[in-house]
Image (cartoon, rainbow, N blue to C red; front, side, top):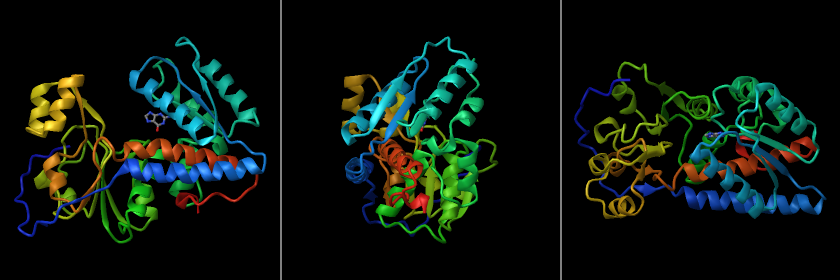
Length: 329
Ligand code: GUN
């Protein structure tokens, strides 16, 4: 993916201060709604249950999984964390998934990725019952999403759509450009934007040039995992910028190149020895009409949407209508 072409920034650049799309506040709103749904289900004697499987010792995965279990606890969702030994085989994992599929108290099954290399990830994701697939990774749910049918949708893309919806950002008819084509974020995000009637372009590492596309984007979603990839000259002034990148920077020169003399980042770096940076350069954000910060943007939504999916799965498994989840209607 080449970003070599440098074009002048349009003279019509907006001079208004961009709106910060506060993912933490939106996630809190969603979690409060999910908490109310859980309470309503409890009055009918129903308690949604989530099983989370974690294999191996990827530090980020351990943090995410702890956070998922903690949020379940806060919202009154039953949760179980399963940590089989690193030596577990694919067959043993398949048995574990089958036992969770068969349990009535478990509505959602989440296999934290990445799995160790010796385990067949594709087979495992395909073994989760589609109706318990709260990650939305099963091919049946991917197919439902692709054909515009109600589906348990992947959490980060669903979170992006919630940010846009709850911030009253129009999607229909807009030029939306997605950078990155992963099964977890890029592809499902592109499909959801398409289902919402945007004109969608997906760029990726083999795209010859991305600037002609990014500069036409009314909504730009960056999910490439490359810090500061999207620079000021790559965007249309006034665009909405959604940053999915969570890149840890532990090199001070790289931190300074991205954030200049930003005192808050410098203080974080001095305290922790690293900072987190998104895929969108801070200078580009200043040219937008609205942007999601990193941290505190899209990342905050992923767990909230997982909670929402768990409640939706619990309702659907009992023949109740799905809750007010826009990707389910
Ligand atoms: N690893 C990184 N993101 C995710 C996610 O959304 N779900 C799971 N299961 N694993 C992940």
